[in-house]
Length: 341
Image (cartoon, rainbow, N blue to C red):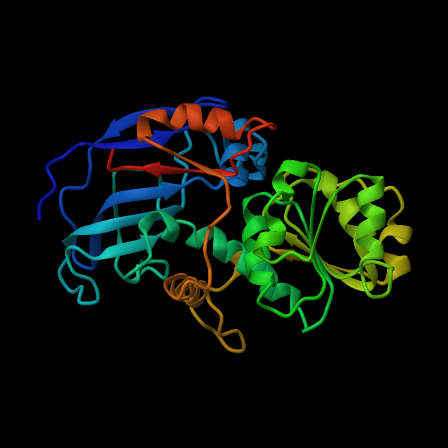
């Protein structure tokens, strides 16, 4: 099929500016490529608002510059198949990593291109990338059955990490956040305990572990460097603190010995792009295999996005969406862009 339509795509022309622009959409795929018509894309709130607001490490260091074309959580329908492609057909529903745009062209062999199983809605499948971000951190944490775990930050990746951590046998499993409204439904989705991060909440959290001294595993899903001292305080002696996501900025530690050395803490990064695209020994859980697993569990109704507050908008409403998601008081954790409208 030859595509004769123009496309729309979201762009950040400059800091704190969002626009919807037209572009010459790909006409047809070359050999080995797929041409997709977009169904839905999901905003990665932390990463994309950091890019928009100039807080991103890539922007601050000059590794990236405006204009920026954001997006990487994508679902679409195959409308064109290049020569030498036999694993996809026109009409297949596909999840992949691609920008917020009406059309995308990508190699059929890319590790992130997967068929969406029957019974999984495109909007739900669009959460697969963010689920994979959370899954990488849960794997890095290596949670043993019965270990106490607290997820600090009940934003989108924190809520997804909760749904994954509840399947590991963690006990107790807690979620903490500065905002009480973000904790309203976490106990319905696997948390044994929820607490606001104030003095009383911190005391209740640490008192809720088996040794009354903190958690075996702390997963910091805030994306904020200011949260690290709190995460270190919540860890027990010889505990593990996992940094989930991409905290942008500098970390200030008042007393390095008291906060890390005195408790023999392990501080571990969990930046999902470091996961190998394809399986390599001794690490079989590649980016592709993680995403296959997430889609399979969605199809079996073992993973979902129920209870996560998000907005569904049209592409024309994208500037307003990003403005809302950039507000500290916005209750929605992300936005799903419906490209069929």
